[in-house]
Image 1 (cartoon, each protein chain N blue to C red):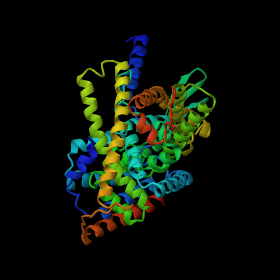
Image 2 (image 1 turned 90 degrees about the vertical axis):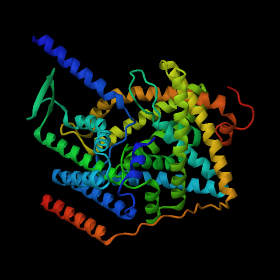
Image 3 (image 1 turned 180 degrees about the vertical axis):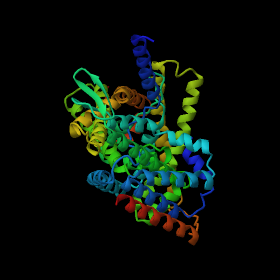
Image 4 (image 1 turned 30 degrees about the vertical axis):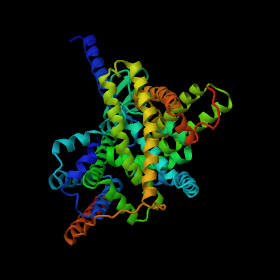
Length: 256
Length: 252
């Protein structure tokens, strides 16, 4: 159902220590966002793309399609940043509407390019994490950095429930479709309401059943699960440290 | 081509571009890496009081009634799934509702703030809507501002004896619109216009997202009403169990 979740279980990087992957992507993300330089963004985009597609063996086509997802937001909001309404034209171009101009400057364009690249590079960092690390592993990392236990437990349950509910919802919408439930706008609104209503009933039923099942297995307020441990490798850590230090130095160098 | 023809061609290009954009109208998550780091941090800090309040209220509920945890988790997953379902739309495009308005009406705004931050984290990681660095800003607009306004409107309408369905419609629509306004304002604060500052920039962001967000808000309102009607017809006992309908005979 959820493409990213499916792909991450197939990734060749799945059994690499989750802490390493988490640290790598978050650090790179931070350097990328703080530095906001075109060079850094290009390097990050290339490295994370290489790691995800080549090392992780995520199909290239899929990866590119995923990268296209946030483009609408990127396009629209960058448009809003570039275009200016002002009484006097700027240097790049100007279209006059009555007494004011829709106009922009070269500095603005450069800024927009920088912004687009930074955003894309950041998204690729996020994809590196989400296309190599299953949610349960990320939760393990969050537990290690002392995220409150209630939140972790809630997240674990929500993650599980999402798939149960998506399954039910997709079955219902399939059967609605086969009975012409989306024939026109009116019927599809009606169908949507029916799905929502039934979904809540099923959801609460499942949640009660789950609680009973947990209670039967001596649930006392904490969910204890065994975790698979994937030991850290010195070589990988060395590479990550090397890369991050290099990136930070490059960022500082570019600033000066 | 004559000038008139050229204008016509240009017009159709603009039109087709606009139509080409709408097919993936999502709720407005600020994408990963789009905000400067200082803004990411300050929006995150601004959310903290709400999150802390939500956290303590959830912890209190759980101490009193351990069973609430599965129901809370279901509520979170419900909001996630509702927001990931394709909603019917007039143009045949593919869009999604935020679901936070519905969540706030059903489960209360305090719980939705915590559930919202979890749902946003999942949306960032599993669906690439929003991001880790912009989690604070998105949380503020979608899990705090929108739900609280929706809940406020809902309660206010209840006090003023407005028809329940109308009040649900207003709550969900205004909550969605408010989310969109707050997001535009967040973007404008981060990127003030060179001519005219934050206000001009906010107007630009509002204008650019209006074609996708305004219809979405109305549809969200309509769908929330339909959902609640559906819930009331099929799931009365369940609604009672989460405290949405008070015990005893209810009149419609």
